[in-house]
Amino acid sequence: MPDLTAWLAALEERHLANLTRAELTRALRALSSVYVERRGKIAGGAALDGAGKRAAFALFYGPLHFLTITEIVRALGADRWTFDTLLDLGCGTGTSGAAWALACPAPPAIHGIDRNPWAVAEANHTYRDLGLNGAARVGDITRLPLPRKPVSSTSAILLAYAVNEVSDTARPALLDQLAARAASGTSLLIVEPIARRMSGWWDEWTDRLAPLGGRAEEWRFPAILPPLLRDLAKGAGLQPRELTARTLSVAPRRSSS
Image 1 (cartoon, rainbow, N blue to C red):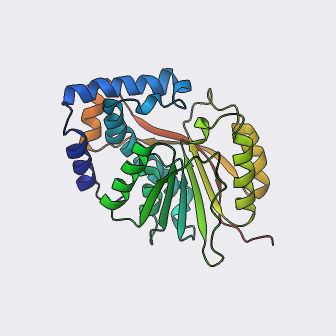
Image 2: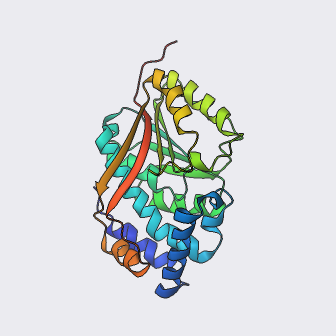
């Protein structure tokens, strides 16, 4: 695990420049309510609909996702997969892609795509602050074909906490693209919350990716949080004892062509 102290300090300085700690705590409570009780509103942008919630996301959920993805990547052995480009679809603030990249002996270049301009700007901050070769841009992953990889490169695709936010009508086309890329040798990692109530699509995706080597797994890791996250969680009445998630993953394979 890299030393995240400087990155977290930069986050705190930037996002608390115009907010008090009390305002941030209230925003984190509201944001947690959206995630736990009203997940259906996330796709409509409720998680990032104000400066307070955006700061709470950047300071709490972003680092929490970083810690979770780091543990998952190591448990899967995905830090040893060979690729030089990471395509982070629905990249959010960039922390999930950054976690995977930093877990690798030679961090890959990251290409992030997200529909939210604030999240894209924050992702570019994340890449710079963590010393990564990465760039994020605004885009809708349900409307654009996945970028083609150069013949000479190896690539991996990450969708962390993103597929749930794709509409039911757009999700099949996204699955078609991902399955085609996995069949051609691209590594794939899909991460979602462990609760299934908002993921009626999960079994279909698992069945589709299984013949390509897809594995569905659930994860629980002890939540060893940095002081900033512990303080924020305590102030908002949260008690994250575990880092939990479930994954669909396809490890590298040779092209069948």
